[in-house]
Image 1 (cartoon, helix red, strand yellow):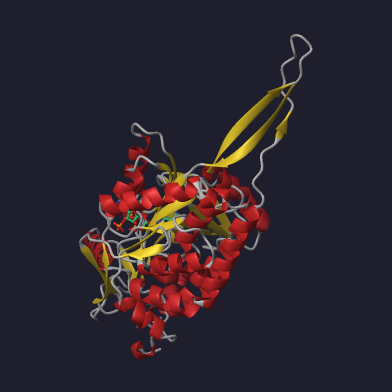
Image 2: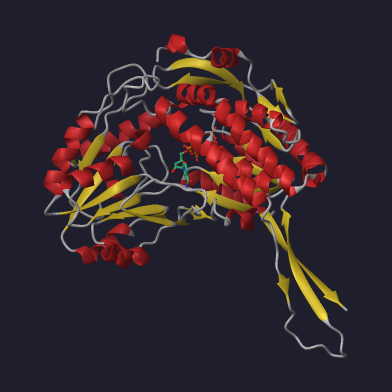
Length: 495
Ligand code: NDP
């Protein structure tokens, strides 16, 4: 679609003065303005105020009031209904939200509409169901009575209070949903801080949440940079932090949360996710798997494959076919439905990937294809495949978070567990083979929160998701998130 085909609601939204969403209304905000830049052309499309201490205070106070008042008194079925209504509203406004997301992040419009918006509604409906399934258990105390008295006990799940949700820039709608829907379903209230690069969609969703009946103050948004996020996490009334972002920032957030306050924290961090193709995988199947694992949304997915292990008997054929596929991708405007490969999401990230290309050139790594910044407006780089010769190569160690696959040939299948586990991370991994029993023997040996077989980057709200090792602490989705957003209270009764 042409830029002139923007929905009138999107054009009008971009023209507004943006700040925060506090206590059920949009608040202009007095802080420094942050330019929101369209990564496909480098042009500023909107401006958003950065939250300082006053805005953070106001948002947390509103969330605390809602926790002590209206939202806490809302029956679980009513909370579920609000989340279901919000899912419907997100779908009804799907084109508008998708256009906003593409403009601020460079995500292909089809991915924004067909995946992110659609999944946001699906996840909201999952969380709505969980709201009515919060329960403890009845326990028979184990010790004998002294004088014939009896005991019984039960546990209750109680919401922890005000949750701070910190969201990165790669899926500004979906990752925010994981946080605020977990909070609202369990009876918590929340203040969410989107990334400074991609705050627009969440500001719009907060307005829709009010229309859906979510009590004013239960769902607040403060915009801003890392300083705003730090101030939010440090606020004394925050009962839980749910952070998704880079390992380095996550470590800082976790350390600060424990320091003197013991605030419970969920950390969803990055990875250097491995993908292993057993020798029986045909070349075309392997190439399709590599594209699925590594190049969706220009590789800017926490669970994306970045380390690819291919049997030596196949690696030349796989890399040749992959290079042809990557070189043939239609690079262009993410608003254009014909585009298959868009820009990176922001300038600093493009510069980080450019530095990685320079590193690869400098250390003599084989650049199979790509390996360069594209000479056009916006933040484009070429989709890239690199081949290294050693398992301890630096390029196999650090998260790229971009369209860069690093390949290593292996000779012996027995070496795969060590290769797959050879980084400090453990978010996700995938194993590809036509022989399920070989895959199932490998699965328990892989240290990762998720192991996919013959698939990659598929998140389902019913299936828990999170990392091990330096990829994080805690789980989202499934029923697992309930433990993180509620306190277990034990009640004992003598009779
Ligand atoms: P960052 O860690 O840079 O930022 C994440 C969020 O934290 C942003 O909102 C950021 O604000 C904020 N922030 C920065 N400093 C602080 C601080 N001291 N205290 C509190 N908040 C702070 O990550 P990116 O936004 O660059 O996102 C990419 C990273 O996210 C990758 O490493 C990726 O792997 C990871 N990720 C993990 C996922 C998972 O589920 N495991 C899913 C998606 C991404 P601002 O941007 O305004 O500086």
